Amino acid sequence: MGTRLRTLIYTFILASWVILASGTRYYENSLNSKELPLPMEEAHLETKKSKRDRFHYTTDHEGTSVFQPADSPEDSVSSPAEGDASDLPTCLLCVCLTGSVYCEEVDPDMTVVPALPKETAYLYARYNKIKKITQKDFGEIVTLKRIDLTGNLITEIEDGAFSKLTLLEELTLAENKLVRLPMLPTKLTSFNANHNHLKTKGVKANAFKKLTKLKSLYLAHNELEAVPMIPESVRILHMQNNNISTVNVDTFCKSNNTYYIRPNLNEIRMDGNPVVLAQYPNSFTCLQSLPIGRYQ
Image 1 (spheres, rainbow, N blue to C red):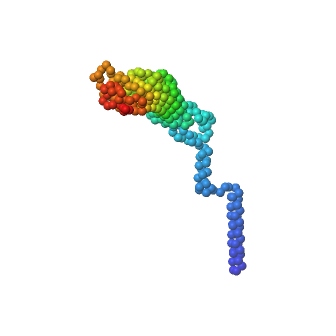
Image 2 (cartoon, rainbow, N blue to C red):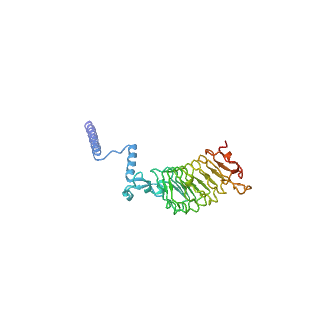
Image 3 (cartoon, one colour):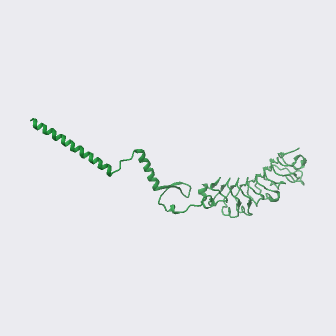
């Protein structure tokens, strides 16, 4: 009985040793043949890297951000040269909403009027580096109702640049470098050319005569020496900080009609000019309120 018990004990110990040795050898072989699983954080980073290798981030033609496959044919298309905005689609450079285009402080620099989507009604291209407006810029966009080109470098506007814009109501050319004005659309209700270099010889005396719907006219901070003919419809006239030194009887009123009253024109600013308004009392008899300016 004692001999049999010892045999069983020795057998159990030997079997345990064999099993332990086999397990150790299997573990070592596993290390040599396979990689251990990555920790959770490293696995997450590896997954992101894998996705990044298979996809790249881009923007579609409507300005919406999308993922494109890394081997997409678009990868082979060469990109425009840096600093040249004219080769890029307008709605990639600007914000295009239904009927409106916003191109403000575009980077890279915008030096020409961008090609606009058809049926654009409102264009805001403020604070860029546009230097010239040509006849072709707005020739096919006859739906325009408002154009704002404030804060550019415009020195020239070709005659006829706005001739086809029969629906245009508001035109802003403030803070540019204009010395003359082109022919303006007849349906304008507001025109702003503040802070330019306009001279009297660059603004025809009848430049605004046919604008029978004009209500607001802003010509402040220029180099004008006389007040141009103002349509009867105008309510607000700003001509402060020019070089105006005289005002004649027919500037606002009618010398041949002492009973004439001008009811619409109720805000005139002529401050900052060398003219002493008190020297021309007969020039304001038709107005309901005197111009703002120097009287002594």
